[in-house]
Image 1: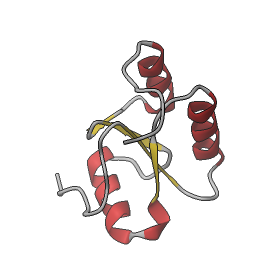
Image 2 (image 1 turned 90 degrees about the horizontal axis):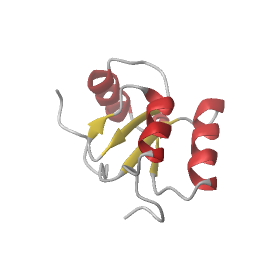
Image 3 (image 1 turned 180 degrees about the vertical axis):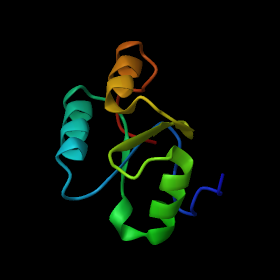
Length: 94
Protein backbone atom coordinates (compact mmCIF):
# COMPACT_ATOMS: atom_id res chain seq x y z
CA UNK A 1 0.00 0.00 0.00
CA UNK A 2 1.14 3.55 -0.69
CA UNK A 3 2.24 5.67 2.23
CA UNK A 4 -0.47 7.90 3.70
CA UNK A 5 -0.24 11.36 2.09
CA UNK A 6 1.55 13.94 4.20
CA UNK A 7 -0.70 16.13 6.30
CA UNK A 8 -3.42 13.54 6.99
CA UNK A 9 -4.03 12.78 10.65
CA UNK A 10 -5.28 9.21 10.69
CA UNK A 11 -5.85 9.00 14.47
CA UNK A 12 -9.38 8.35 15.65
CA UNK A 13 -12.24 8.23 13.17
CA UNK A 14 -11.53 9.76 9.76
CA UNK A 15 -14.19 10.37 7.10
CA UNK A 16 -13.12 10.94 3.49
CA UNK A 17 -15.78 12.65 1.42
CA UNK A 18 -16.66 15.33 -1.11
CA UNK A 19 -18.53 18.64 -0.84
CA UNK A 20 -21.50 17.47 -2.91
CA UNK A 21 -22.14 14.04 -1.41
CA UNK A 22 -25.41 13.30 0.36
CA UNK A 23 -24.01 10.16 2.01
CA UNK A 24 -20.99 12.10 3.31
CA UNK A 25 -23.23 14.84 4.69
CA UNK A 26 -25.58 12.32 6.32
CA UNK A 27 -22.71 10.40 7.94
CA UNK A 28 -21.10 13.60 9.25
CA UNK A 29 -24.44 14.90 10.56
CA UNK A 30 -25.17 11.60 12.35
CA UNK A 31 -21.72 11.49 13.93
CA UNK A 32 -21.99 15.13 15.07
CA UNK A 33 -25.52 14.71 16.43
CA UNK A 34 -24.39 11.72 18.49
CA UNK A 35 -21.30 13.49 19.82
CA UNK A 36 -18.65 11.36 18.09
CA UNK A 37 -15.22 12.78 17.38
CA UNK A 38 -14.07 12.55 13.78
CA UNK A 39 -11.92 14.31 11.22
CA UNK A 40 -13.30 14.94 7.74
CA UNK A 41 -11.13 15.30 4.64
CA UNK A 42 -12.33 16.55 1.26
CA UNK A 43 -10.81 14.23 -1.35
CA UNK A 44 -11.34 16.76 -4.13
CA UNK A 45 -8.52 18.93 -2.78
CA UNK A 46 -5.71 16.52 -3.72
CA UNK A 47 -5.11 14.00 -6.51
CA UNK A 48 -2.58 12.29 -4.21
CA UNK A 49 -5.30 11.73 -1.59
CA UNK A 50 -7.72 10.39 -4.23
CA UNK A 51 -5.09 7.96 -5.58
CA UNK A 52 -4.06 6.84 -2.10
CA UNK A 53 -7.68 6.37 -0.98
CA UNK A 54 -8.54 4.28 -4.04
CA UNK A 55 -5.51 2.07 -3.49
CA UNK A 56 -6.06 1.79 0.28
CA UNK A 57 -9.75 0.92 0.03
CA UNK A 58 -10.21 -0.58 -3.43
CA UNK A 59 -13.17 1.79 -3.75
CA UNK A 60 -13.89 4.76 -6.00
CA UNK A 61 -16.77 6.14 -3.95
CA UNK A 62 -17.20 8.23 -0.82
CA UNK A 63 -17.75 8.32 2.05
CA UNK A 64 -14.91 6.09 3.19
CA UNK A 65 -13.87 5.67 6.81
CA UNK A 66 -10.71 4.82 8.73
CA UNK A 67 -10.37 4.20 12.45
CA UNK A 68 -6.87 4.76 13.87
CA UNK A 69 -5.38 4.27 10.41
CA UNK A 70 -7.29 1.06 9.65
CA UNK A 71 -9.83 0.98 6.82
CA UNK A 72 -13.42 0.37 7.97
CA UNK A 73 -14.55 -1.90 5.14
CA UNK A 74 -18.22 -2.00 6.11
CA UNK A 75 -18.75 1.70 5.43
CA UNK A 76 -21.12 3.78 7.50
CA UNK A 77 -23.08 0.74 8.72
CA UNK A 78 -19.89 -0.62 10.25
CA UNK A 79 -19.06 2.81 11.69
CA UNK A 80 -22.46 2.90 13.43
CA UNK A 81 -21.80 -0.57 14.89
CA UNK A 82 -18.36 0.51 16.12
CA UNK A 83 -19.92 3.63 17.64
CA UNK A 84 -22.60 1.60 19.40
CA UNK A 85 -19.98 -0.74 20.87
CA UNK A 86 -17.85 2.14 22.22
CA UNK A 87 -14.95 1.87 19.77
CA UNK A 88 -15.27 5.45 18.51
CA UNK A 89 -14.42 8.27 20.90
CA UNK A 90 -16.92 10.96 21.72
CA UNK A 91 -15.99 14.61 21.79
CA UNK A 92 -13.73 16.70 19.63
CA UNK A 93 -11.11 15.09 17.40
CA UNK A 94 -7.55 15.29 18.68
